Amino acid sequence: MRCCRPALLTAPLLLTACSGWQSSLDPQGPQADFLAGLFWVFTAALTAVWLLTMAALIVALLRRQSARTEPLELDPRAERGMARAVGAAAALTLLVIVALTVVSYGAQRALFSGGEAPLTLQVKGHQWWWEVTYEDPLPSRQFTTANEIHVPVGQPVNIKLKSADVIHSFWVPNLAGKMDAIPGRENRLVLQASKEGVFRGQCAEFCGWQHAHMGITVVAHSLEDFARWRESQISAAEPPDDPVRKRGMQIFLSKPCVMCHQIRGTPAAGKVAPDLTHIGSRLHIAAGTLPNGRGNLAAWIVDAQGIKPGAHMPLIKLEAEEVEPLARYLEGLK
Ligand SMILES: [Cu+2]
Image 1 (cartoon, rainbow, N blue to C red):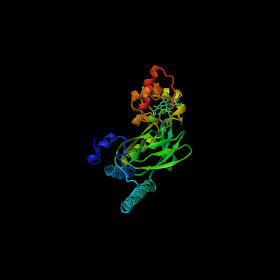
Image 2 (image 1 turned 30 degrees about the horizontal axis):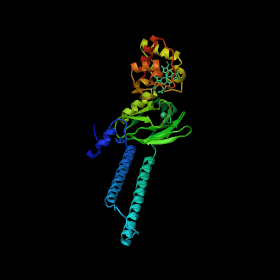
Image 3 (image 1 turned 60 degrees about the horizontal axis):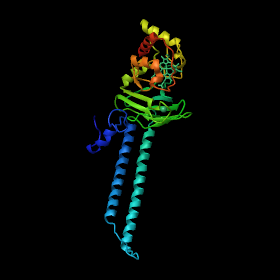
């Protein structure tokens, strides 16, 4: 494990998995950098305050006198000294609070400043998956996908956050802070990846039974790879060429699947569930719950409720021999 801070700090960092998978202490973009910086400034300042307080407490305990004189005799010089010490401590407290407020305000401003981003996405939270639409001035180049966001490295990406049902919260810790997705409202978040990689995110607002299975994956590519990916997503699904997959497509189109799911290029045009046009190209299925692959696709189709109880995909009656062609068809939708 690569560690990013001095040795003294490695223990807490090991606990929070400092590098790699879903950690705000391993920032991989400017927005996450600001937030991690803020975290370390606060941690350092508050540690110093705590240590000073404890030191003062120890000194006070050591200097404690057992008996008071009766009647109480006050030494005016000592009293003045103590009043000064309390005054200085109060001033220092105020100073620390004001300084931390200013630092935090500065980081907020930096986070929300960014001008026009070249790429704008709409991300809509659903119980319990994410709908992602890539905006384009040309309607024919706009497309929708699910649970996986691809972004070009080194470019700010503007995200418009919405919700279809309850409050969700979009959080990809390595790239940016949290932002709520609220029904009837549009929130904005900017994120940017500094290097290529796959970053995991998570719904961060309890949104019902399968809240914990509402992951999101962000894949950052070089500009050329991103352009290639985008073109492939804009295109409709390739019609299957082998007999098994052809049969899989017929099965899909003859089942209630089409009421909920869309596969562009076929009559399936449902809008209430993840777009499956290029499902075969995604890394995971069911919002990060399972790695993508023919076996898991088959398992999901046969028993979505066993894998993700409460998910809004019902049990659909299939014959045993229908499962394999269906899974092959979906797997081939690259
Ligand atoms: Cu959620």
